[in-house]
Image 1 (cartoon, rainbow, N blue to C red):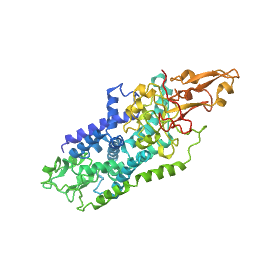
Image 2: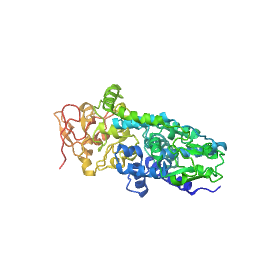
Image 3: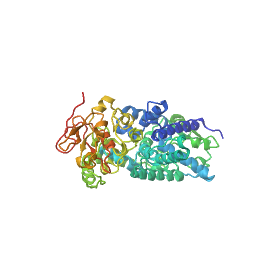
Image 4: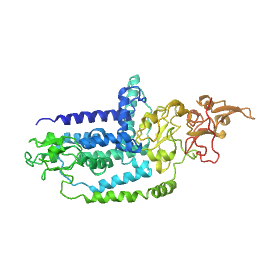
Length: 518
């Protein structure tokens, strides 16, 4: 049996894309411009369907659409990292036993589940519910699996080796969001078990991207074709099809579920399967949109309901976000922030929640370790979205990486000068917690480390000097909070703004001044 060159090329390209994206999320270097491979990986992160939709990247979507119209679901078999991860699990399952390599069989499509998840995803995107979209976005799921699930384990192994081997290994700080890690491991288990037992069952039964591209691929120029003159209906291709979309009895392939892996071509001992233009396949094969011969009325009915449901989006968002989200209790903090601080470039908390899919690429690239996955800082609406945690680090004055790597446009790219003029919050000083007051010592750490010179030490009647914050200059970078020696609660903290660079965004009725240090 001759190995098909298409399969070799597909596997090679998929492995390269997967490795680059895995390394990108594993935080291999934080400056994407340092190494060409890192730059390539950062570009690949933008060539994902749901992030491109969230970013309204018309050019990217047009290219992906053209690729699908030409070659079918090549995105699912090469560019989608979660799909390639499932292929790896499927390959491991094949090695586990001899029978596992031919364990599949044709299944009728689960139409209501597929179209239901697709329509729900479209409604969530239109309603601006990014936290909910994050649960179905395959790219975001993959990012969380690598960064929140597997990376801390790798860091722990590295630190163990560092303790044993000394200077041969460099220790790395381990930061874990247990909520994000739990969700990551659940999704890893779901997709892993699904791939182990059913190949691409997850992609063809649940994934909204797979369903969307599957519908487009019905009109693809190149498709898998069965030559009825050569086919003896042995069923070997059907048993090896991880998409469960080949019906060998009727010599038909469902192009909407075919992920163009080319496994069936290698499997056929009679050379009856080929990947050819549709006009060549028409004469000798029975390629059909519905292999069981039925008319897919469910898809028509379902798509017809989407427009009706879309009309209620404003009310759905208002009732869900402002109603139920507002009633969720926030995690107790040593002090109550009216608003958490979101990264510069997010523009506003509402915009961040509408566009972010919680892939955590910005978190993995943050050199100051200040960006962390939110638990309940934003409320339920922003679970897993990036939030500034100044107990972990602070926002570097010159750094603009989070906006440069964000694939959805949830964090806009800013140049260094504009970043310095973006006010994401302001520092609030509490004298009763300051070590100058409690321990009768001289400090001034916050003033010494403020990059915007927004803090100065002012003498008081008791003969001590305390920090005073000039809110017109404070940008909310959080360096003062991070370096504050007061324990266990910092004497100075950053109060975030709901809308960046907006006079009333702090929500306390006082507003804040805007200005820049000349």
